[in-house]
Amino acid sequence: MKLSPIKIIGVKPLLWVAIAVTLAIFLLNFYLVGFGVYGDGIGYYTPLRSLIFDGDLKISNEYEYLSHSASNFGGGVRVDKGIPDYSKYTLGMGLVLSPFFALGHLVTLMLKTLGLNVVPNGLSWPYELFYCLGSIGLGIAGLIICYKGARLFFSQTPSVLGVAGVWFASPLTFYLSIESSMSHGVSQFLISLFLYICIATPWIKQRRQQILLGLLLGLGALVRPQDVLFMSVPILMILATIITDWRKTDHSDTKSTLKPYQIALAYGLPLVIIALVTGLMQIPQLLIYQWQFGSFFNIPYLQEGAAEGYQASFHWVNPAILNVLFSGFHGLFSWHPLLFLAIIGLILVRKRFPTLVWILFIAFALQVYLVAAWWCWWQGSSFGGRMFANCSFIFVWGLAALWDYFPSHPWKIVGIVTTVFFMGWNALLVLQYESAMIPSEAPVTMGQIVQNQLFVIPYFINHLLKR
Image (cartoon, rainbow, N blue to C red; front, side, top):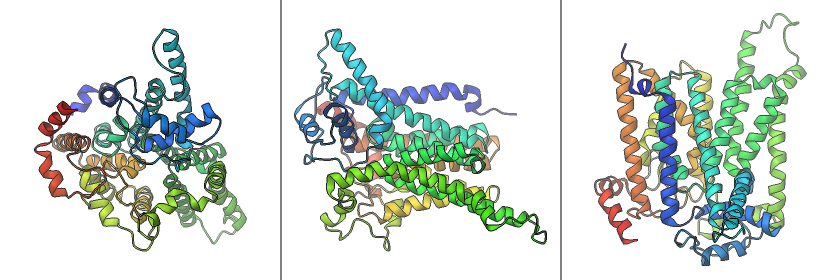
């Protein structure tokens, strides 16, 4: 019996290597750029700082400070748009990462005591460093959960390949190691844990698990509102359970047939608990939006489409599904081809796990539809399909299913080679993106991307030398 290289090396050493590579990229980028919070990440970070240090949520002073000050690491420009009074982003990201922000404050006080020139104002580099490390740590924890979810159904090597593929050959790569101040790593963690509990525990019969699912989904929706669509998973699981139980029931035996109120209690109440906890957690954010913008419907997210000339922010009857998936303009599968193999993996094991495959596929499809209906379907300044990082659990499961479907030793080697190849593709794509070889928020064709891949390394080196 031939052993795969993964079995020879072991899972834990590979995990530590992956963590070391991720942290090395982040720390190098932090040092070269001069800060860790920028882009949309500023919109998530500044309300937390404002709430703790100013006692309000008005972020104009934070933006002013960040736009005119330089980090102790060397400075740089990170605020290139207007300065808002309030953030359009939800408070979930700051809420989840507040313990890491507090740790940054303690480190700042210690460094100041030692005589270093750091100001305990919530905006100096230790705060940003630990805030971002918290995001990275949770993102990595989410990937470990994805691995455990895959191992419930598949063998070790396919599961490792699934995690490696998503870790280093998906949009999540960029938002773990470079723009970690954005919400994708934290969102991925919360939804991965949510999905793991859904498929690994008898939550339908356990009130504590139902409350936990509500808390996780509620936090997920506070981090990224699109995450609320994963409520479809427990709903579909309940429907599947009802259908299965109905088929097993002897309907001629009236004593064994559940009454309507019994069905409602057994199957409906768990969903009500999850939805209620999730909904209650959104009330503070809705009240904040009402106070800041006069109405929930006036938040910038719901007004941007019309402001940009697209008539509306969402086009529900004309979603750009093919563009979202296959366009050169940040298309999910065109930028990250390995994820297309994950969908093939779901299809291949549909007969083995019919119910679960359909549930995961529908959960993914709902995310596709929402993103495709948005006026900014290319997801703004985005490394690939960044808004699908919350589907990492599904992608890991699908890739593990694919490589487990072909269990022979030669196919294991094919899986390893394929995964490594697309990890390399993704790394070169990151270099293209970071060196502005391809624009971050302008249309680009796949022909340009493929051609650039041949010249990206010398171009990137030249870009670094000119900085």
